[in-house]
Amino acid sequence: AQFFPRSKRGQSFRHQSLLPDHYQSHPHYHSFTIMNLLFPIVSGSDLTQNDLATINEWRKMEFNTDIPISPKPDNEDWSNKFFFAKDPTGSILAFGTLRVTRVEFHQKTYSVFEFVSLVATVKGKGYGALLLNKIREYSIIHGKTLLGFCTSELIPFYLKAGLEVMPGDTDRFTFHKDQWSFPKESPGAAVFVSGEDGLIKEMKKHPEKIALVTRHKKN
Image (cartoon, rainbow, N blue to C red; front, side, top):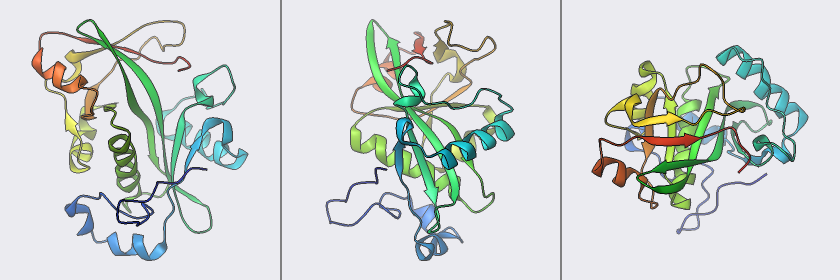
C-alpha cells in the first residue's frame, strides 16, 4: 500500500494537511485525529481479497451494480488507484477509486484524474468528506485536473469539500461510446479541481465547445 507522502514540514498526511477550515471546525474533527485514521492508496493489482469483497458489496448496495471490480492485467481495475479511510484495526470506513481518464477538448488531449465510486461504509461521520479531501490532495500534488461526475443533488457535498462545478453542467462533457461503456451512461453534473494541465482554463475560455471523455479502457 502507498500512503500520502510527508509535507514540506515533515508532517505526515495521515491527518488533514490540506483540510479546509470548515472541516477543522466539524464536530467530529478531533475524534478523527484521536482515532488515528489511516488513508492508504492501493493499486488494483495489490488489493486484498477482503478489501475487494467489501468494495464490491458496497458498490452493489450503493449503486445497484452487478459489475464487480475485478483487477486483471488486461483491464483498468488493475492499474486504478483505490483510496481508503481505515480505522486502526484495518476496517474500511470509506473508499473511492481514482483512474486516469482521457479528455479531448479543442483539438488537444488531456490526461486527467477522475474519481468514481466514493462510498462511506459508516454513514454520518464525515469519513467520505475526509477521503475526498485526500483524493483532492493527491491530485494537487500530482498537478492533474481532478474530475468527477454526479447527480445534481450531490453538488452541495462536493462544493463543501472544496471542489468547483463546471459552468454549463452536463452540456460541457460527453462520453465516448464503445464496447466498455454502459448504454445509459451519461456524465451528469461535472465537479472538478483545476490542475496544472490547463484543461479547466481552456474549457472556461471556450464555453461553446464540448469535451469528449474516454472511459472504461486500460490506461
